[in-house]
Image (cartoon, rainbow, N blue to C red):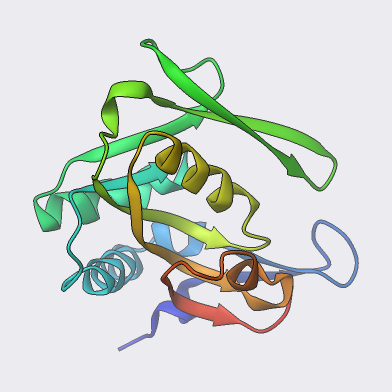
Length: 174
């Protein structure tokens, strides 16, 4: 039986020389790989007391919804600015070459809610930190952040110290 990391496609020198791009679509295109990823993420939350699963557009949706389904929990989307139709709150954060903004519906997280975040990748931790800020501004408490892959060399886990971080695959580099 293959391991989850066997489904990840590693592309050297992309997007620039010296970087190994870890392509999650190798997991998605294989039913066994996808099942392994969803099973691993579900296990990460098996004994976690959470009220809701949150995931960012778009790969957080792909992995978060089936985990929410398995755990019989609701799923709350976090989207790029301007994509949600009801009243939202917004968080802007830095990217390597600019900024990005994400939003969540104001009424989807209530004070005291215990929230688990699911996404495909943690690198620098910037997107996850922005999600945490949104959730906490609405009074929610992030109880765990779960990822398919982690690029440990970019120190996202350190940026999010104080939060419970779990990753199915950890790559030591960038």
